[in-house]
Amino acid sequence: MTQVKNPSVQVPETPQMNDRDFLNDCLMTEKYLTTAYSIALHEMSHQALYQDVLAIFQETEQCQRDLYDLMFRKGWYGVEAESPQKVQQAYQKFSQYATNQFSNHGTMQ
Image 1: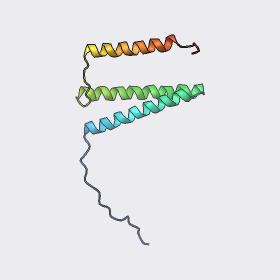
Image 2: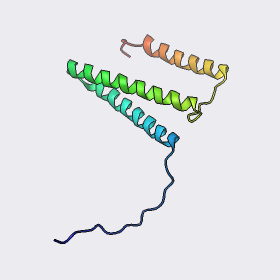
Image 3: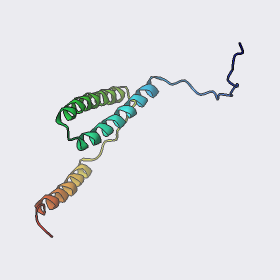
Image 4: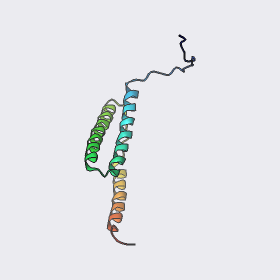
């Protein structure tokens, strides 16, 4: 019997993944999944299926949050603090937008 062998291939050396890399990969996957489940939930008409996917979505969302919290505690996920003035400006901007949107809701223009 003749054995078939794969041709030899040059595989470039890559650095080993560390804990931060693995957690970051998991976090990005969880973010992708929560987005996909959210879109699916918006399109579901079958109530029992909706409830099942909603439960999976909530578990996935909690897993994503737990990964984020862990990475943040370890200093592997940084966020920048914003000044209270900028936060207030953004709040006012979006509050005005929402007020304008909802005050015109239901009226024919």
